[in-house]
Image 1 (cartoon, rainbow, N blue to C red):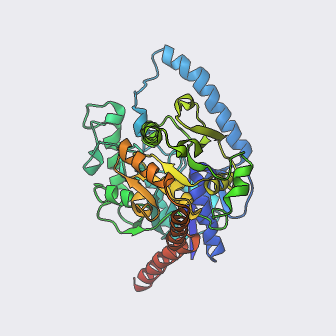
Image 2 (image 1 turned 90 degrees about the vertical axis):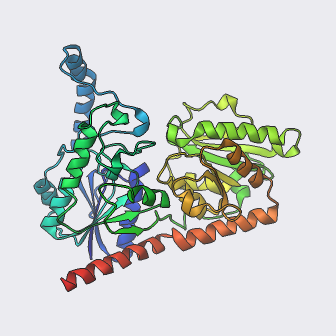
Image 3 (image 1 turned 120 degrees about the vertical axis):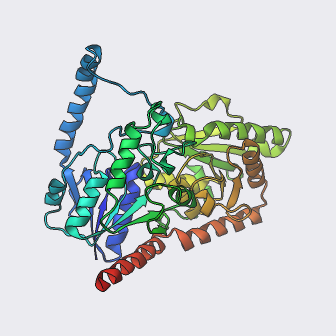
Amino acid sequence: MKVLCISAHGPVRAGKVAFDLHHNFIRSGYDSKMLTIYHEQEEDDVISMHSPKQWKRIQLWKKVDRKIFQKIKSKLGLLKKIKKDSKYQFFELDGTKQYYSTPKILHRLNGFVPDVIVVFFTTEFVTVKNIKELAQVTGATILWEFLDMAPITGGCHYAWECEGYHNGCGNCPALFSKKSKDHSSINLAFKKDNIQGYDLRLMIGSEWDHQNTSKSSLFKDLPIYRTFLGIDSNVFKPVDKVPVRSKWGIPEDRKVLFFGSVHFGEKRKGMSYLMNALNLLNLRLNGDGLKEKIILLIAGNTNDFPLELLPFKYHCLGYLKQVNELAAAYQAADVFVCPSVYDSGPVMVNQALMSGTPIVSFEMGVSLDLVHSGKTGYRAKLKDSDDLAEGLFRMVSLSLDNQKKMEQDCRSLALDLIDPEKVIHMYTSVFEEIKGNKMLS
C-alpha cells in the first residue's frame, strides 16, 4: 500500500502531527511519502514544492511586499482590506485560489502513485479542487484528517457560535459580513463542487470534531472513522519526578500544576477562565498549608498573560522547542491543566495522558474522549471557572496512593487508545477496507 501524506506545515508545531503519522506509516512497512510546501532537510520520503533557498526568497519577497508595496497600494486606495474577527481564525480569504497546479504537484511526485492520500493541513497549499484532481488522476482514496473546523466551514478554523456551515455560510461574523453571498459562502460552494466524484472519507480525532462534522452541510453524509492523534510512548512516559523537578529547582514535596500554550492571548485557549479558577482555588486554600506547596509550571510565550496576578508561585519554562523538554514538563507535574473553551484537541491532552499526568479540563475537544472525572482527572462544565477550580482542588488534595492510581489509569488509557501502534492499526483496518472495495470493483 502506497500512502501520500499532505501537510502545508513542516515537522514543527501543528505540522508535527502529520510528520509523526507519516513516519509511523513507514515503521509499519508502508511505502509512505510526505508532500509539503518546503522542508529544511533533504529526505527521500519528503517531497517539497520548494527548496529551502527558494522558500527563503519567497518569504523575503512576501516581507518586502507587505512592508512596502502593500502600504503604497493602501495609500493609493488600491488595496481593499476586509476586516476580520481574529477569534475565528479566518486566514485564507479566497479558498478557491490555486497556489500550485495539480500537474505541478504530480510532477513533484515524480511517478509516485499513491493508493491512499491522507490530507492534513491545506491552508495556502492545496485546494479541495487539487485534492479531487489528485484522487481522479491517481485513483487514490482520500482520507481527510480533521484537525480543526477549517475543512467543514467557508474559511474559519473555529466557528464559535456561528452555525453557517450547517447550511451554506454567508453573513459571516468572522468577516463582519451582512451579505449572503460573501467569501465564506463562495468558499463553501467551491468545496461542495469538489467533494464528489471520488472516494473521500473522513478521519475524526475527537468526539467534539465528530459532533461538528455531523452538522456540516458538506460532510455529514460521508463515511467517518474515529481515530486519535498518536503520541510516542517512549518519549512521553512516567518517570521519577524528583530528578526532573530538581533541574528546575522545584522541591520534591510540591504540588505542580502545569499549563501552557503557544499563544496565551487566544480567546479559545481560555486563559481568563484559568486565572479565575486559580484565584478561586487560592481563596479555598487560604489558611491551608497546602497553598504554599503549589507551584505553577508554565510553558510558552507568556507576553499576553498577566503573570504578576497569579496567586501562586510559578516557574516559566518559555517556549519548549525540543520534544524531550515538553515531555519533562508533564513528568514533573502532578496535574496538567487545559482551560481551552474551543478546540479540536489540543494535542497536549493526549501528551499529558501518555505521560501518566492527570488532567483538569473543560468538557471540550478531545477531553470529551480522554478525561474521565475521578479516573484520569476532572472534566469541568464548559466555561465554568468554579467547576474548574473544584477540579483543581480535588487534584491537589489527592492522597499519594490515589495520585499514583490516577497516574496509572492515565497511562493505561493512553496505551489503549493513543499509542502509535493502535492508531496505525486503525488506519490499517481502513486501508484493508479500501483494498477490499477496489478488488470488488
